[in-house]
Length: 236
Picture 1 (cartoon, rainbow, N blue to C red):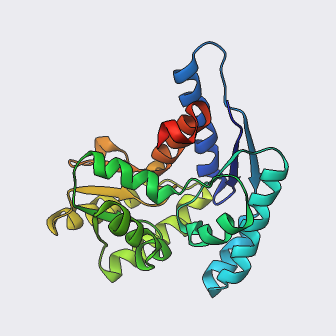
Picture 2: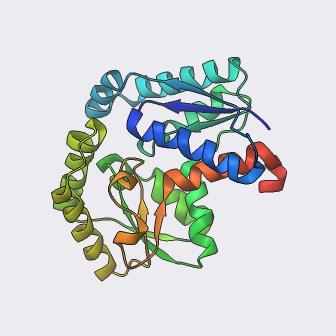
């Protein structure tokens, strides 16, 4: 099994879930005492959040590239970034390393394509919803159109993520608000819902929503395990 490199800490709550899922999926695939060969580089989110807020993406690119290089130097044979938003730095990471980088939007797009859906709703941070990096990947590589919540709903989702979820606060009232936002996306024609923030699955699951939801964290983790066990060509 190849060694998976994880860039975590954004937030550590979801990074913990990544680690758990990757090891559970490895054990399911291989049985016995199997666990994943992996390395995790955890950044300090208190250094990341201000750079996001002020829009200093050049500094964030450098931090993500440095983290990926440290993992590669430590023996990682593929790299995962354990957050949706920071895939804005995907190109910087790919330029810095010589091993494969597994993009979360591509793992998600493959799952949507398998369900033959043409339009999905996307919820996450304002960066993920409003910038083009996620929507363009789904459109250009998988012919999937993406709709996002209205401005007020985007603000509320962003607040819930940064003020609550990344701080380990999981409120029933916020879960209800998220479900109401999802209902409005369904009314606009969404066939499925992309949980485009790795913290959102901590409060929203398939059992809560009538149409299919795509847990980006779980899909990303599964792709990593498949690649680590089978190899890049087998997965492709």
